[in-house]
Picture 1 (cartoon, one colour):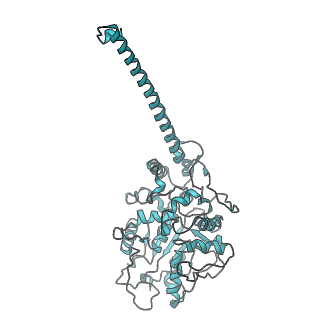
Picture 2: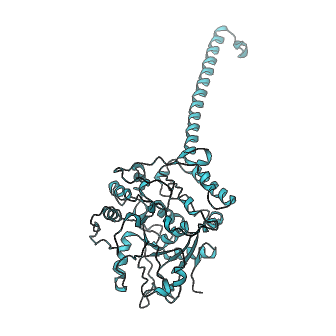
Picture 3: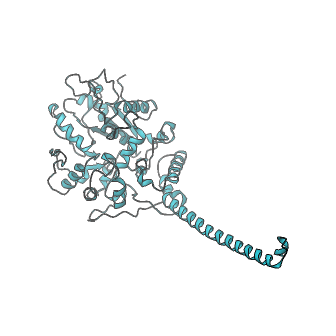
Length: 449
């Protein structure tokens, strides 16, 4: 039959062709089998990987590392060597259903996170434009009228707002794998600034519920779950504003750098809930503000200090003071550590996640004018404002975006001081952003008009 098929003229040729055909068929069958096994294994592995990363695809508990489940976690503080958390979390779709938004917003939120997780490259840990995922955002969506509803659906923010980016960092976030990832990035953007032992020593002591959530449970606002925040910059536009009472009427008040209130109560108020500082900038603020009467970070009962560590000094300082050891001098220049008006404990401190700071730089204040400046970073005030935008439900902003020619640099200036633009910040692009946020109704910006 084979001979007839190929029109053979002799049985020898038929046997030869028959053998060749049999070999060819067997080779094809073997090849198809190997191909099926390889592709099947690849698909299975890919599906398993996606299922681990995208909870929407699995109707059961899943694992994401180094995620934590947020403010209600049980924290472990006594382990001398921190280990990576397994992160067994409830289905994230279930978590989203518990927030105060209507289904349209929940669906938009779920779809956005699912899409981003599905598009995450396999080598994402090597990229400074990729961030770990976290469920912290669920804790800040208990208000039905939250500003984050606008962030979810407003087209201007579709490439800016990523709710799953971690906001605060504490002991559960440390692992060797995370250290290796974040050690690629410098300054406030990562852990290249310090050794693994220095980082782990400091984070191991950030192990209280106060470290996991911006608003301590005993100070949370009313039953509606909504938080109103006043974010206070130090711009000269506040001098003579008489906004002090309005500022103090908010649930929480954020202040930064030389946060003078004494003598300026009528314009800037007296209440301070959060004092925000990059650690070395705090030292600079104390030195530059001394002639105005600013000798130490503000203090009042219940105040919390929000740090953006950009050098190893910050982590060394926190590790020492939380362990009742002498605060170290800056190893880089020998300057003395800042003094606080009361003993600093782990309960008093919120530490901003390096991924959140990189996310602000990349998506919110990505300066084209500073793109080749290695040490460019958002200003401390910009980090504070965007931090409030991701945690508060109503954000009123004072002391930002004032005219650089009409108003002095700072509200506490005793003589007119010209605005200075430093190379490591881009005050113009930040000012443009605040005005855009105001025009879109995301923030209420005090403009003195």
